[in-house]
Length: 557
Image 1 (tube, rainbow, N blue to C red):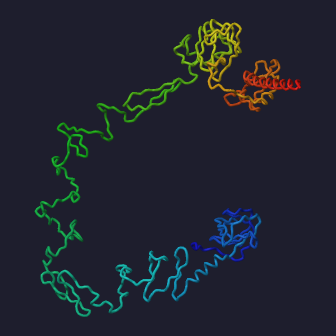
Image 2: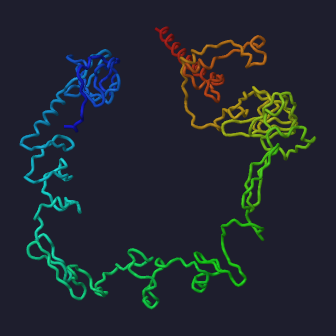
Image 3: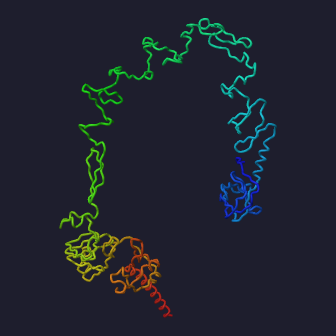
């Protein structure tokens, strides 16, 4: 059985209802009224009494809130209850069983009820004259026992606590160590006098004059100090002759020497050298050597390597530098910066900026005016040139070539044809022929080139099957680009003809679409549509050939 907990009871508690439904695991319940309900200690309540959902729970109440709820008490099962379910305090079998358990512990006159931390326990009555004492070794923490000397605190037995004639001679210990008091016959005390040390004078026991010798004085009881009560050694009694040369008096027994001239330097470890944990002595010139001296110094030092207080150096204005602390130990190096937009054309002299002053890749397309005419003698690049103005080439426009794409060069002032290559151009150093036209593409790296079809530039070659239903489903459309796409806008722009890339995406033709840097559908690969249509043409030819063979077979019959 669990540890016992005092529960709250109160008569005339009114029945009420729960204000909102609960499931079978919540540990808090709200009721609509708490009139007459107990509070403080926990108590039991019943929910949905007399129904198949009856459940008893242990609760603690604060106003109309029941908290710390223990579900399914008193052999009931935790269940869900609807809002408006009846609820009221109840006396349970648990309460009755605990009362019965306490009553059933008594069996004999003098029994005591104890608790072992879990259940009630019987403590039977002890023997006559025994007392109840605490004993942590017992399961219930107590036991009956006889009174022993260990149970009586020293100096707590007064005269009134001792019965008359209770102390007999046998109870009085004899004196030890020499002649003294000893137990006499009956209740008397007899005195044995040591004639050398003590005597009886007028019925008074006293020490004889000069009766206490060194042998009678215990070690460590003679005290000294300022004359007065408790001092056993008279002043000026101990002289140098009384001190044993081998006494080895330790420094903790010595008073502080404060009189000048009482300690010679030769009696110390003082030196003018920089010696750790040693007294300092000046040399013949009055000087001494030291490492670090901590003090409030005044005057000027002959030499110094560090400022007492560091100072910060910084630059503000158009040219700035972050503060650097300076304490004299190292040189100050300021990292100066020219603030953005500080140097304008006013500060720059004509022709002041030379090629060497411009960082590589510093001049981007954004820095070149849209209407600027850029004239160059020769351009060699593996990237791209972007401009909305004119690019006049007096020499060559050289580009690189990788494994998969061949990029063009324009020689001798030739013009760049974006959707083709002029007949006077060479491609990758090779003449393309007077009537050759090739489509030029811009890659994701902003480099213009064309796709080579030669097997020399290909690997992992295998047949590819397009979804013919999706290819046949592609619907050609007529359209115009929006005003923010084409220069002349919706009204003045001409008609365009082609496909909508999203239709290809929806049809699963991922091979025919391209995406932008955000992953959105961007363009339709018309050149690949020709490849897909070639597959359709082959399929149609195969069907036509099959039909022709069937027709010929039918005609021959």
